[in-house]
Image 1 (cartoon, rainbow, N blue to C red):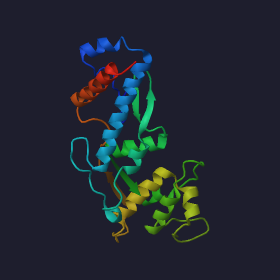
Image 2: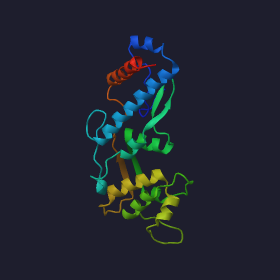
Image 3: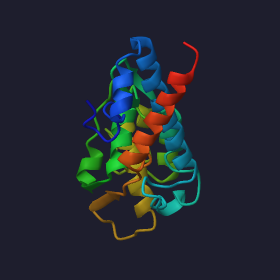
Image 4: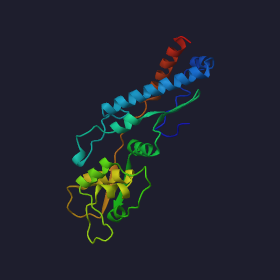
Length: 226
C-alpha cells in the first residue's frame, strides 16, 4: 500500500504469535490498533521536528540567507500531519491536502532544479484556492521581487494583490527560496541552480523500531477491557 516514504503501512510488522492473535480481533479492534500505532508515529515525527533532526538523528540542513536561524523548519508540515486513512487492515499517515503533500515530498526527498529569469516572468493566473498566501506575497515584496507588468517598460515591484492573483503557492515558495539565496548577489544572473536539501522527519528510524512499537500497542489492546 505505502509506496511513498510519506505514507506508513504498519501491516506485516507483528511477530508470528501476534499475527495469529490478530486474527481473533474484531475489525473494530484491528482498526484501533492501526490508528493508535499511526498516531504514535505522528508524535515521534513531530518530536523530531521540534528537535530539528532527521530520521538518522542528524540535524536538519540549515536555511540559507535571511531566513537562517528563524522559525523552526518543517513546523507547519508537522502540525498538519495526520492519519489520512485507517481501516481494519491498513493505516496511512500523511497530509490530506494535495499541495501540502507535494511540499512535504519536496522537503522529504530534496530537489535540485535550474530556474531562469525568463521562467520567473512567465506567470499565469491561478484558480482560486491555490494562490499564494498573503504572508508569502508580503514576504516576496520584502525580498525585492520584481516582474514585468503589462503597460510598463521596466521591472516593477508588484502589489500584494497582484502577487496573490498571478503567483501560486508552490511558485511563491520557490521564489522566496531563490530570493533568499540570491539577495546578496549583484551579478544580474539570468539563471539559478536551486537545491533543496533533504529534511526527513516522518516515520520511525528502523523497521525493528516500528515492529516493536506495533507489538507494544498490540499487547496493550489485547490486555485492555473489551
